[in-house]
Image (cartoon, rainbow, N blue to C red):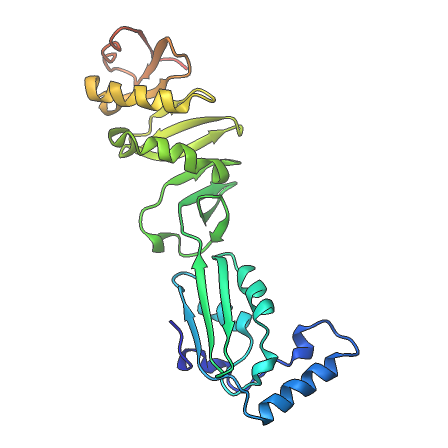
Length: 257
């Protein structure tokens, strides 16, 4: 929560209505009304902001645009709401101006969901794929890593399925979208799990069963191909024994691509 002290940097730098409304012949009148209201004692008192966690405070101050002692009528709740909601972190803002002079703002921030790697750059995104920060990537604890064009907007659905198989999830380092069509799971041991397009949930549940029955993800393999529903294709690391066949299905191992 911000109190008046938290916004003291605004000082006496009042923002006139003419500066935040379109310029025109009525701008001088609006400023005159605000000044008259200030002379009558209608000035900004305490400014309270609730819900701020990740939004930089300096961006909130700039969006509010007024400080203690400024004309109260120079503060437009509608315009401040629009400016606040243009900030990447803020999904929704509720702004109230009271005749007592107090201003109360309630922020609803977007929640950091994952780190998106795209063309060599990294950014924090929410579940909808909106970039909320490109700085301090490690400030939000461990987050899923999404890689590739379109992964930012489509990763949440796949991650929700992955959470249903915790033995698989804990071994996955990244969700990699291939050509904006099909997913790979990159494991911490460097292996890739190739998932079928449009049938990711069934393949992940199948992989979970393979891990429970054969500890497949703990074996020294380079790739596990689940794109075909009637077979399991495993590419082994050189010089290793092939994994046990999947129960009821045929398994193939190859040292080649």
